[in-house]
Length: 137
Image 1: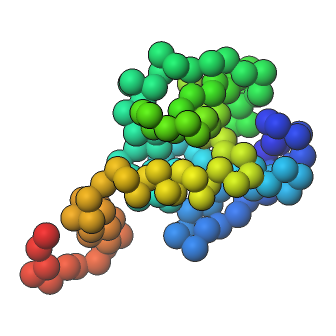
Image 2 (image 1 turned 180 degrees about the vertical axis):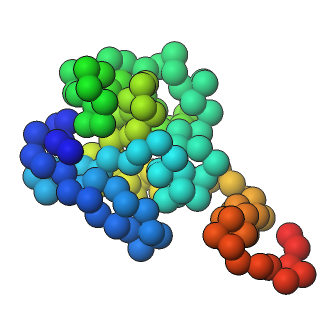
């Protein structure tokens, strides 16, 4: 995969959460395939309330590193946020520039209650085959 910003090769990088993202060794940007940013940040979707964000999307000249002949659009990470991320309208992947991931993580913590996060974690464990003996939220 080639970085859409600096055109260096982006290498696979496995996070401590077990998610494989693409990391640019040139500019230190990160590519998250559809669903990976939500998984990483423990949110319900990559870009919360995407339907409300789409009208704010601005075309960029950056090629999608995953799709052929598609350019990324820039839009806020979430409603009311001043952080802009690059997103592919075709494959729904997201590109974060260097230092944007901690900002996304801070914004994501405002989205869900602790109970909602715990429920998602429990669902993920059950999908992975673990049994949660009598534990209820």
